[in-house]
Image (cartoon, rainbow, N blue to C red):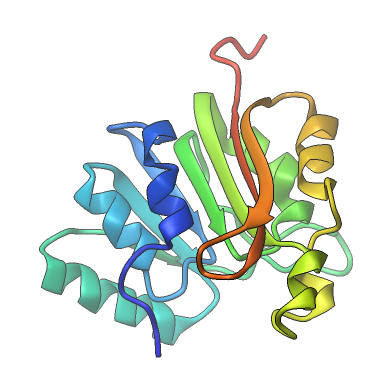
Length: 184
């Protein structure tokens, strides 16, 4: 079953989201977060590899009475260039990655975040395997890894970072970071 409602983790982070501007939902599938962000007044682009997921997201958005833009793209690295095939150009006021392993995209994400732009990443950690075999280990973060990836980028200010069990019985790393307003 494909969920309609946004993740409880995402709704708990709402205080960090801008009230207006452009938002990018990375690998957002059928659009549950995109639609929720559009309802909050953001101009949302949902980027995903799945044509079927994007079509479902467009129908759901129309049924909800909001508009989202969709962009079919594959973020998996191209073996020759080690970059995604197409990243929707910024600047973005918010970039959201929920349960999509975006570690390799962090430099591209930072380049496309506007001044004072917010990055939200929620990804399960290896500790999740203590209670569930899914997702597979290759998609899971090691302890502290997400903070380390964001810190290495050094162009982001970490506003909030947690690694904890959720009420939904998942162990997640959750990062909220901001690109400085001055990008000099």
